[in-house]
Amino acid sequence: MFEGLLAVEDGDARARLGQYLACLRHWSPRVNLTGAQNEEEAFHTLIRPILGAEGFLSNPVIDVGSGNGSPGLILAALRPDVEFTLLEPRAKRWAFLRDAAREMKVRNVTVRRERSDEYPGPKAATVTMRAVGLDPDALRPLVAPGGCVLVFGGPELPGAEMLRLPTGSTVQRRCFT
Image (cartoon, rainbow, N blue to C red; front, side, top):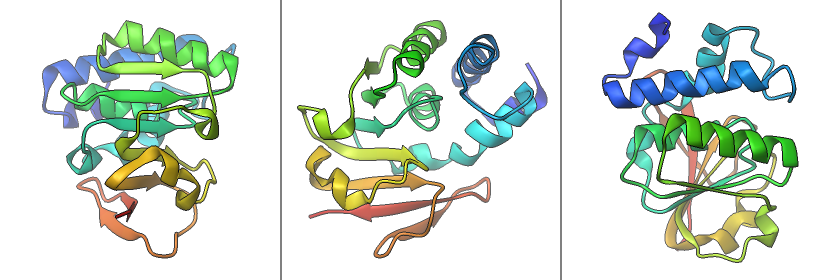
């Protein structure tokens, strides 16, 4: 395991994230999951920007467009006490997510092969997405009353609160009443 993961204090979470990187390495030649050329790049692109956001989660969580597993699998590895539903309509990426969740031994994850606008529920207290390009208002049907959408990457959203994470990254939070 390389040094970037040493920043994660919980040894079990560190092991789960190491397994995530191993799954990325295994699947990336067959499925376009990331432009990262090695595990260090993958850590800095997919894991590091998420670290610290686990403190902003309320249970349960829906991750929209889960694709390469960031932020959904990363957050699930860090918060085994929270239930996650990962939504990914593309078959190969859905298969990757199922395999990675199994290999990471994250028991708090359900992977569904469907789009966010097809998801029948239940609603979540937190909805996450990373550079999916959806307007958070389009995700309102997924959000329980008083819940929030956390957006990693992408353009600045009107009405969103910018939260600075301990790693120096930011996440945008938009809450609904």
